[in-house]
Length: 349
Image (cartoon, rainbow, N blue to C red; front, top):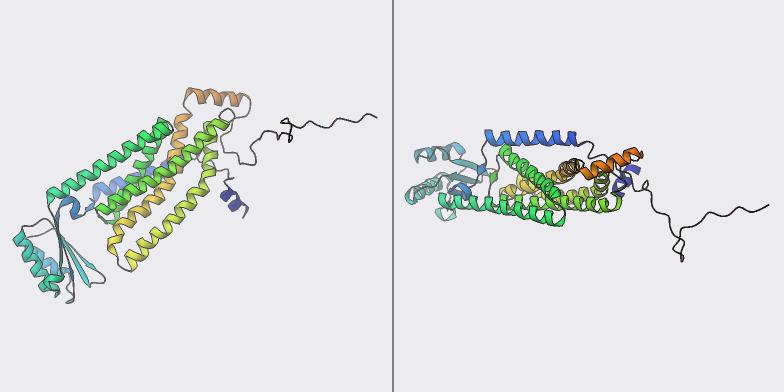
């Protein structure tokens, strides 16, 4: 219980920066797996990005995937994606963009196979040019977001903090996209919105840590190394980061696992997966990627090198984070005088 109490109070003494090689190895492995998944398995882009037609119909006749596959092959469609939703009660067929006549014929054949009336079938068609426009606009939105983040953090803090924050954001983005490539979940405009949301979440967490480090540099810059300052700030921020992440992951996890997998609300799955993975990875990267990377860069500056040498010459160099109870505080002045208390005088015999 004492460790839990110290953690909740931010009085732990964990060396986050000292374990940077371990964190970087973990991140490198996750990035390699994500990039390999992107190379081996392409993203399952929705029709909003690549164009196409999506046919959704009820399935009272209990048509199988093989039956619908025969229909698409007869129509000359070889790369159609066919899914049974809600335990086979609904079918979802996605095909490339078709001419209007071929599309109407395909809808009629699906209605005949499934037993659904023509009026009950939902058809969503997007042209390839519109899909390319949506994809290009999404990339532009991401670039504008990252540029605004870089400018804001450079103005509010410093450019090295901004660079470390951007590296952390790209780390989160690549891993999240890699998870979509591995799972094969469809990438829709809702996924892009969720990706921008989790990037903002990760940025907020990183800025809070960096702001605490900047505050401690002003207070302890002449008594501690930058690594010690970063460790101290990170240990103080960890309770807030972990509690915030848990309170965010619980409702998102319920949407992802209970809503989409158990109750079959597949429309929520694409959005919730990006949120769940992004929040978890963003909490990790702000503490274990951005902060150690920043400390490594700052320790190579001439000013911090000279401070470290001066502290080492005095035997005061600190690499781990001192807890709040071990930091030397100034003496408390006597009330009403503003002076420090003096020791009592010895009595004469």
